[in-house]
Amino acid sequence: MRKVQFPFVAVLGQERMKLGLILNVIDPQIGGVLLTGQQGTGKSTGVRSLVEVMPNIEVVKDCQFSCDPKSHIDDLCEECRNKKENGKLEIESKDMRLINLPLGVTEDMVTGSLSIDKVLTEGIRSLHPGLLAKANRGILYIDEINLLQDHIVDTLLDASASGINIIEREGISVMHPSRFVLVGSMNPEEGDLRPQIADRLGLEVKIKAPRDAKLRAEITKRVIDFDDNPKEFIKRYEQEQEELRKKIVKARQLIKDVKIPLSVYEFVSRLVNELDIFSQRADITFIRCARAHAAFNGRTEVAEEDLNAAMDLVFEHRIKSLHYEMTPEEVKAKIVEVYGKIQKAYEDPKTYRPNKDTEGPLKHDDTPQKEFK
Image 1 (cartoon, rainbow, N blue to C red):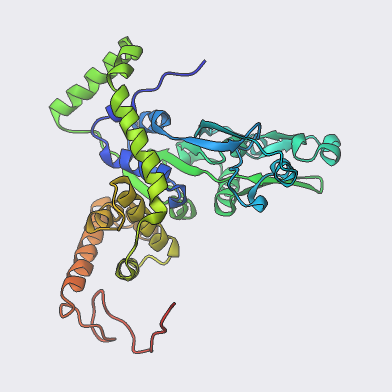
Image 2 (tube, rainbow, N blue to C red):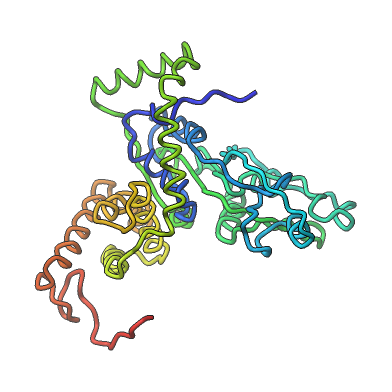
């Protein structure tokens, strides 16, 4: 029995959350999204409702890992490699999946378990797939991610970084592809997130309950209407849901054709430097986020609007993990201030003359710079 989900387009007052989720579906390499906020602000509802607007994906028929038939042979599981080598690889279409990872999960439930007596004769077929197998090419959702056991977090980060899940038991090793979008939600009042996880999660959205009385009233009305008659409520938003789904599919097709001017790469690097963020992931995530935003809006070149959207999603949790003493308001103010300086410097180079003695976003040393090709 499939649970009926609240329509994604009917979620009100959380546009940044919806955008962060959509951009990750368009480009899973953004690295996921962290949703922070108090209980009852719509975090779980927003994530679970995403399922209905996620696109279908092509997979190898009967593959328990949903291998991509267009992947290089080295990126397929053992069984799909054999099929491809023998010319017996068949293709089918299936829904992109959202997999929930519960807090009490064991390592075997995450990675999968091996039947040792069968592994030598059956290979990958001896594996009882875990959540990492089911989440391949989909979304892995962890509610209260800050409360997850450290060893489980380490396993997830290893798989997320490598795109491979390795199961080792008694000297025997089996591996399969595991590329997924990691979505975590948490209430910051219940504990902080480890900095390593904060850096791996591409985007962050702080979710606040709307204060506008009319908006809150409409949210309440929609929830009650949905609970009273789910089918009728879903039907009301069918067309909008389908339009959004098509828009996401089109953006996924367009994204690699979106041009990123060289000046944008330099702009982003100077911005990250000025914010004192050391991880190169910040630069990469910013560019990917801006490019996905451009594709979502049907543009073939990254524009200022796309940079603004990325600025709003990429930096807050990274700065906070480095400067615990700063309040959320101070973090936001710092980002806006530096972003404004960088923009002004590019519009008028005389604002900050680039030399080693000048403080500002265009400061640099006198060491000759290489030309990169």
